[in-house]
Length: 146
Image (cartoon, rainbow, N blue to C red; front, side, top):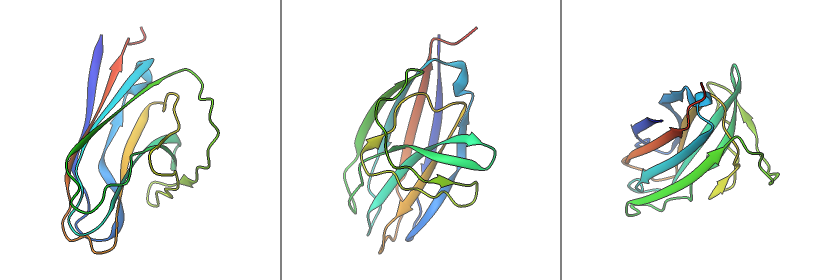
C-alpha cells in the first residue's frame, strides 16, 4: 500500500526566507518514504529549497537540502529514499521554530532516516530574485503500518 503527499507551491518572488503554507502530515504511518522533487530556478537570484522535520511543537530541523538552483536554472528532478533505519552520518544542523526556520544544512545534503510525522518546505530566494518558481515535491509513503 502507498500514499502520495504533495507540496505544490511557488517560491518567493523577492529575496527572502519563506516557510511554505503547505506541510505534509501522516508520514509516521509509513516505514519507507520516497521524495521526488520537480524544481526549477527562480528568476534573478539563486534558490535554496529545504525540507524540515517537526521535532516537537515549534521546533523544526533540516532533513533535506536540495542542491542550490542558479537563477533561471532549468527544470530538474531529485529523488531520495528514507526509512526508519538509522542515519550513519553526523551533520551540523540548526533548530528553527514555526516562524523562524533557522535553515543551515549544507546544499545537496540529506540527513537520512525517517523524518517522523510532519515535514514542511522552506525556501530561500537569493539577492536579485524577481519572480518565484513553481515547484512540486511528492513524498510517497510505502508499506503502511497497521
